[in-house]
Length: 258
Figure 1 (cartoon, rainbow, N blue to C red):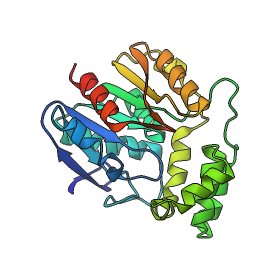
Figure 2: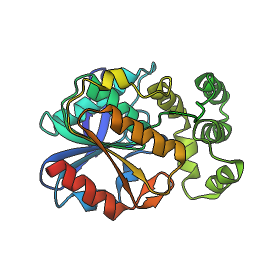
Figure 3: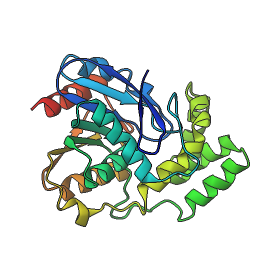
């Protein structure tokens, strides 16, 4: 992987593929750049794609003290590698991070989001002390419990669904990256859509959700799209918190190159 040094000296690893207008892909909780392995080939004929390992994951470095602003600077560093400005596609907690970066003035030309982690309407927010609880579990090296707690308390998955995840092929990755869960809870703040701040954001934005996602994620996507003056929402075929890759690729290529 290629390397770029972020503002605080942390090394961020990234890959560059394809030709065309630049687009940076930003992942959510647990994952590294490989989450986009199926999406990059869909975009590469139309865009120059940049995928990177968020700090604390994969081949990227980390710093002793975490701050959301450091991750904003990481994204900005990758965008500088892309020529100084770029479209951004971000999902899950990565969508929350991308919004923070956009509102902080990072040069994003077009912003595409997939199901940001906000809570709106009747949907309850995660426990107020979720970050503290995760930190205690991680300090005691109870990584499996930390993952289970995050999936249940933060994502709202049932115990049966968590058990299915535990039997799945990527559970080991979940545990390996469990220390970054407190990064993602910090990014989400109080879980509310920052409508007043978004009201002044004039960059074209596309907010996506799957037609088979959770109701709270659908509501969050719709509320985010409505809060963005240049935003529009789009529901696409898929499963829980996932859009079919070929459909997603076409939608992003059209948005990024239009």
